Structure formats: C-alpha cells, structure tokens
Image (tube, rainbow, N blue to C red; front, side):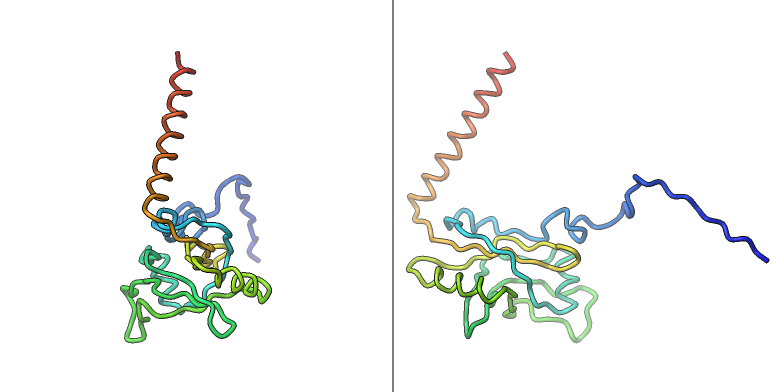
Length: 175
C-alpha cells in the first residue's frame, strides 16, 4: 500500500505571484480622470454592473474607457451610457457591442436618493472608476455638478499653491 505524504507550505508565502493586479483588486481597471477636472464630485456610490463574459475579459485586459460615460435613472433603474468596453480579442461572433447601454445594480433606497439629487438643476451622475472587488466588477458613480472655466482655473491655482507649500516645507526640513 502506498504511503501518502503531506507537504508543508510556508504560511507567509503569497498564493499566486503572477496574478494580474487589476483582477486581484490591487489596481483600478479604469478611471475617469476628466470627471474630476470637469465636475465638482460630491457623493460617491459603489454599484454593480451587468456585463457579458466577453466584456469582463476585455476589462481584465484593460480595454475599458469611461471618459464620455454618464449614468441615468430611467423607469426605476440605473443605466450606464457611453461607457466604451473594447471588443475581446479572442472573442467569437458573439462578441459584445463596445458602446452598449449597461444596467447598474443599486439598492432601491440608494436609487431613490440618487434620483432626488440628480434631478436638481446642474447635477448629473458620472462614473469615476471601474474596479474589481471579490471577483466582481464594480463601478463607482459620483453625483457631480458641472464646473465653469473659471472654476477649473481656480482649482488649478489652488492645486499649484498646495504643491508649492508642500515643497517649501520639505526644503525647510532638509536644511
């Protein structure tokens, strides 16, 4: 009769060193950087996204873009429009349409709150980032108010002043 051997493993050794940082949730799949420049971002909310298999594989490959995307409440449901998820390279004839409208999953009370706030004048719902959490793709939606050109210049001035102040503090500590 054969004897079974038990192999001991190191307790502190990471499980899979070659795991993709996007798929493991260490890094965002995509970000909407222009949202912070074009809007004042107020409330943020994590939502689930209804996707097909080829869309998930494309997002893992880094082929998603949220630049012109926005969210809309229609018939008691939340929808993501204009989010570009490129075609999966190894897909077949059943590949997805890159700009299709996708459903976002939120709780009913969260949806009611978003609907009330987004109907105020000047407010819209903008996706800020897409990321993985526990193997599922999540989309962060922000309630946003549009910036005017002078608001953008003021934000840039404030950012520059803060950076210069941090640099001055760092220089004074070195000397």
